[in-house]
Picture 1 (cartoon, rainbow, N blue to C red):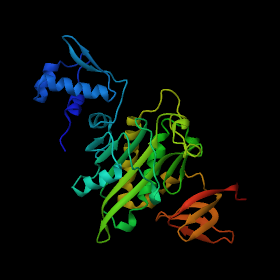
Picture 2 (picture 1 turned 120 degrees about the vertical axis):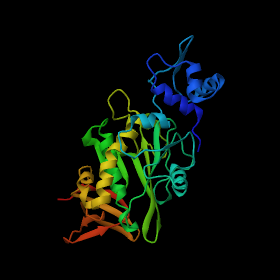
Picture 3 (picture 1 turned 180 degrees about the vertical axis):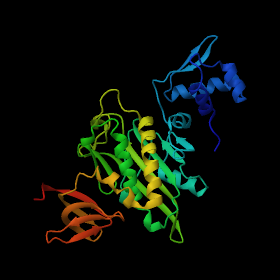
Picture 4 (picture 1 turned 30 degrees about the vertical axis):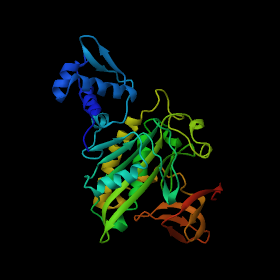
Length: 333
């Protein structure tokens, strides 16, 4: 996919001297006409970027607006490979579907799809994910772990631990909670969800798509009515200045990379503690709705294979591989 001229212009403006760059210089470096540069600058302005045009001095980018276009993502990354290359979409059906197609075409590990809005965003078990265009962070990361397919599912927990750590840059740590299996909460309300999808071949993972949605900006009242009572936004918990989608994205990727490498090399047991520190349900009475019916017990945590452990009233321990966790009304004695 050819890089849009507007992104090429943005990349040069991001690295330009404070005085900016003239239209003539931009045209020379990019091998296009000054008219084409002007049209690209107008596209950036329409997208929300504040590009100042000064007679005789050219164009200068103000950094008050930070978007999610590839040049900005690349500039903020501190990872070795996660987040590169980047594919930006103003609108898509699903970033996971787009990433899956890209992976099938040969995209490398670490390739990233980001979008401003999804028409068909989805979560686990076919549930939908509603976003706030321009304020939600929506992305999918392509990974190619050299693992058997059966060893891949705990990667959801690795990602949720990294996301919780990233959100702690804005929200009080005590307010952040991982709700098994794939949600991150703030003050008991959902602020982010993770969807892991995999293609396998001969019982080995061919590629994994890690989809993440985070309610970054706006107020809880801005969220769709059907989720308002159960969801929140990072902005509602953050001290000024308001959280920045670009910083959340790059913070997540930076937190994920070392955990992912450890997971691939040594298994989930090597990163379980990073997940456990955000699991507030430990020692609480819970009910888990599993595919075979509801199960109740006291939550213990995860084992080395990523199964949820519940202690039954008779003292036995049960391993839960899939389901939805709900808290009971009282703590276990």
